[in-house]
Length: 329
Image 1 (cartoon, rainbow, N blue to C red):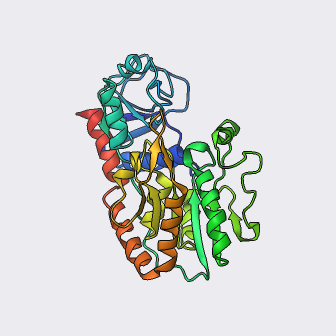
Image 2: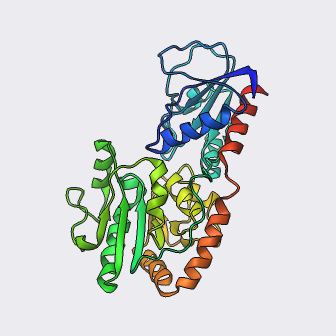
Image 3: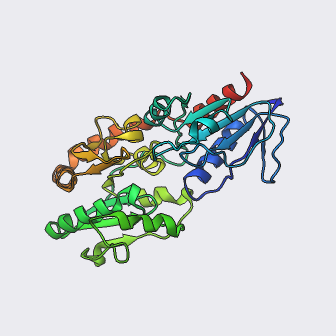
């Protein structure tokens, strides 16, 4: 570590949701390269480079910065860029985007950006042998909201579980943000007030919120993961960590997912794009992929090994090095 170099880090580390987990890993790895000061006050003038999360599709920084030698932003913009985006983009000396797709969207809007793909903590998320749990366990993770596509999961699993009496749905859908949950009212597939209606609830395991360090204990129970997300500006942290545990996925082949999906994934490719550029899946495609995974467990295990290999190159160490180079080059 070069103690002469200092970086102000404006994100809040935690062991809960995506940004918090990412911040925890970035602070750890950046601290091996330079002095990192996690800034929790409301100051807006800095004497060293600043790393700041970018909040939305207007590219607004998490905190207004009046003065800093260099400002590094990191954004995940699923929605079309707002009018203020080009103006706010000038606030950053370097703007990172969470996937190749996100970078291309920014460049198409006249905004200079570089791709910075989130890493995986491979000390925590290690390859696991195939589950010895009886039946067929399908895991679905990510906070419950329209963008994450859990309405597709529910609709497909109603039919799949109706055919296969040993099928189990394991969900990690905790969401503490009511406005985000309310977005599911846009769904034409489920009722937001009672989204699980029609599922055999005796075969649905709904997990409470849990720290990131506990999630490998959940992933080891699953045979396959189901991620029919409508849009991901990043690579989908939950899916990447699940794959790192040597678990195969059925996933939308679009947006940020494309950076980490290889031939091991059961790719969802039939569907359509809506006006915002989000991908609407075909439920019959999901069912076909579920049946493939269910019918051929040897093939499922082979695909799981390939899924693990596809994420192995994405480390938090490499991610931190990109930020360090941007801050001090």
